[in-house]
Image (cartoon, rainbow, N blue to C red; front, side, top):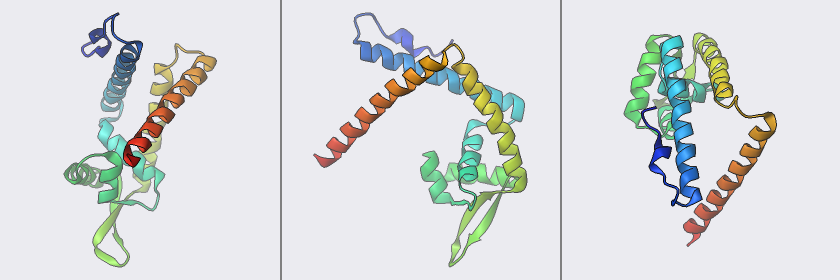
Length: 162
């Protein structure tokens, strides 16, 4: 594997650092598998899939700036992806009532059908990534990572107050 970040860790590193490197490596490996499978099976990219997923969760559509914020990419990136998806008939631009300059992007029926196919397969790829764990181990890992997340949220809140 090309980017095994875990190899950067050493036995004398703190266990938390070694764990972080393992988590990061696993995340990268799973993401690479998903990117490759999306490209091979659906001739699409992860950013396109992510944009369609945001629209699927918001049937009324989203403004471009909202899509940009949710995807954590520039407006230019969202515009380019939206233009491609619109040309393929997967999304449409709809005028926002009361604001002639604003448009919402929403899935077309074709886009919703296409996304559902990809999402079902995406779920299977994620399930496969964790297939070496039992249901109990999956739940334990979920619980433990939830504790890490809670600790980070609390730390972030404390930093903002300070």
